[in-house]
Image: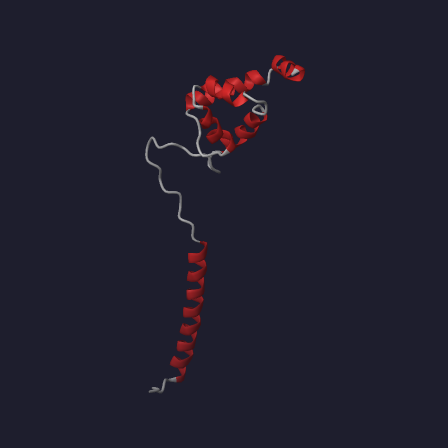
Length: 125
């Protein structure tokens, strides 16, 4: 049953229909583009490699360049006192990061392997 509307109300209802359809479209776009915000991590939780760790991401290629020869991974694992599979988790498939102490040891190792003496050794091999 169609109820007659006052002409002013009819134009208002048309405007409401337009607003409703545009609001539904905006809501659909917002749901499609919504990405949950970074949830707050628990205190003491392990930091994982991601876009939030740019310094670690910059360090990975430097270390990878030094792990080309056979046995380099095992030597680095021994240096850092970790299992060799952890070296893979740190640098090949960045799913973990070492703790602060091991990161400092890694930086010392990297500095030592970048020394001119080490570069001469590598050139001879």
